[in-house]
Length: 568
Ligand code: ADP
Ligand code: MG
Figure (cartoon, rainbow, N blue to C red):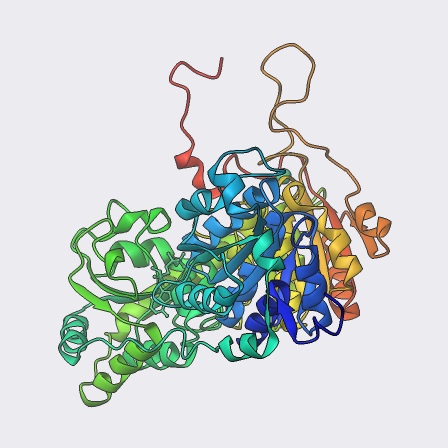
């Protein structure tokens, strides 16, 4: 056909891009190649910001960060087979975290896959994606592209959010359709996550249980951060006068310096609390499944969650409240306005006294000027910068680098901390930093152990290419957990835990035109991190730590099985 005959035709590529834009999905992360190269090119030309990363896992994690921060699904694009499989890891991680994300992958023609004819990068991707996602769809007709995008958004955002897969066979992208007909097929999803309000009787029952509490505790999880219910949670927590604890990524839903924050007396608070209100926090491994020596043996739970099957996950729940957090906590507040409840002030005072004692015990390590540095004083130096810049986003991964950062760096704003998450994974730090920087334009400090940095370190090139306001910090203690482990055999190789102590990771940033600093003292760490944040430019601070700093498996040593016959 001549150009004139094609004039009113459009194709799968364009309909896909229009369908995304129609739903305000205006960013796309990815790694391109056959058959999706032109998806990215056309997306960019039509006003979608395309961010090309260096690995599909990173593209997916950057998109997932956007999903967590905005509540809108992040979108990422991969090529077939190997690219697709790399993309499944963040898809599953986002699903575990309960974050909305849409993975789109190019794929082969159905007839070649279904007949097993051995196509280039041929793989039955739809079926491989299913167990790793909340929902998975293949679109075989250009007319269905608007629908598949709409379904993906609905599936990603409604109920417990998660990762959705769209399989894009190359020949669907190449199909043509009359442009006016295509225009008419576009549609915008109405209210992708409608309010789900529990019945009044359920609210009443939960609040009656709370009224019986002698030692109430509110546990805030990242579901609350995601649900953007910080105003409702603040009113709830302050009106009942209970202590609260925040899960890692719920830090900042209320500012960490809030007088009711029980973080520094976590052990005592959990052991003594008799009624615990769970606001978007699962009773999974991170909360010891709600049972055992960490909890009061008579504790009763009021559990608010949007997913009904989460209730009774690991133990009996006295008051299940199934609904969305924003509406539900507002309903709690409405109830409390007419039936006020206030915890005995002695309970909070006891926690505050225990906190003061614990803080005095630990603060020395954070402010010490000993060198070589430990995680504590290096992070104590970074804390000075974050305390002066509350809107800085923190991405964080590692073992000790994760645990100590979570404990030391206070968060003041919701959804500003992104870390290893529900699975406790690595390889998420730099992509989360990229997703946060692209989404918000705000400064990000991305704090990694040297081992964690290895999983996603090539993304410093991406940070430089897009000139993102990210300051990357590597806390280098020369190994996985620590740098002083010995090879138990005699072949002379480094131990399985050993990495390069005293390496100059900052030179990676310099290689791509960013600024690199090497810090050996807390004063230098503070100065260089502050300079990176103030510059708004790609910066990296490599911090030389003692190879003896850090604990094997960080705070979760108990999860590491020990050989019964000893190490050899
Ligand atoms: P954390 O790791 O911080 O403890 P989890 O990811 O374990 O948090 O738990 C978050 C919970 O919040 C999940 O069970 C999820 O279903 C729930 N959730 C997510 N969004 C909402 C929402 N809008 N309303 C209610 N619950 C939600
Ligand atoms: Mg290390």
